[in-house]
Length: 489
Picture 1 (tube, rainbow, N blue to C red):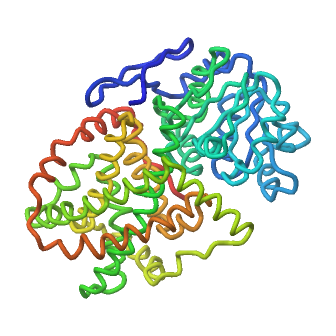
Picture 2: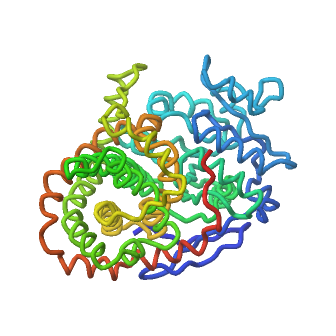
Picture 3: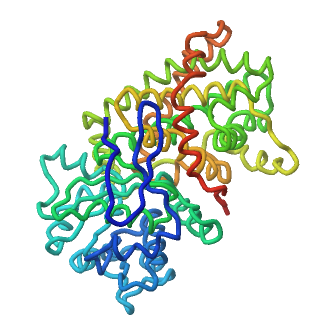
């Protein structure tokens, strides 16, 4: 089990009750911004390397939060990067010294935050390490590089703090909710933080300051290894890959049962990204079942209990392959094979041609939760929760990686665009994982779960769901959530 107890010389920490104990957390908010110079003591220049969704969001949030201090935020890009024009449009320019070559920015920075693509980081991290100034801190936003170093027998350079701050949401969410936080203090995306190396004893406050500056409503403790495992498994399961498998399988099932295209889309994709996600976000997992009528609960119960087992088997398989390096190797091999070539898009399957018509029916057309769809989705989410709990992850990490990131960040964007759009436009690492595992979930639902939905519900599984400790953990985390939903343009 990851230790979640730590102390800070700068920030007021709190203790949060979770199943079986407590966790130390930091409640964020703009009232903490005056403490940032203390947290960033010794840091005069922060280099954000990369301008993807996370790079853009984090560079902008850090710059805005540190306005009025003597700490400067600069963006480093590879020569010829197509992102340079957009960075300039957002005020990072060569003329004001806040935009430059990635290795030059690295060499000039006291905190270097590595947000380039995973394949580029795997290929070029040694060049970046060689360019670091003495004592500069290395910042990461997930543990992919740790996994790669272990696979290749490498390590982080000695004498440098290695910290991670990992927002539990996509880059656009990190920026949008930060901007909404200007009106509602604390609005933002929750983050985990990890300290992997701390040669001078300042790493905890540096990580917490970084998280506060990003606008995180609450920050919880993890390790870089635990973050890597939960993050990569999560995006292949309930955050992305499983969602794609769920809606594709359900759309086909509802069409075969006689629904027209729009109705089948509403009962599958629209239901997951709309009423089911909103119910979980506002009232918790148990509320999905409790808000159904007697007949609806009977359907939910039967579907939940036949879906949980097959979903749990796949989540466990994903976890094993991430833990032993198989998944990472498959990503690196795919990147080498594909090179600069575009991957085929999944948005060409028949159901996605229906999304425009379904979206057009939303006005004045409130969808109820579909009990069949809810049973599949909640069973899959619970399967991931149980796998993480059995593997020793802390409860804050479990509920953020399995529930909160899904319903408060990713699913709202999927609702605005659609699931296929999200898969086709996410990071290449996540996209490769979703394309690999989504069809595995789909076939398990179609071949194993759905044919068994006429069987009576497994009362032991339902009792375990009703009394599950996740409900306590999620309720504790929800108390730290600002009363704001993300604005999706």
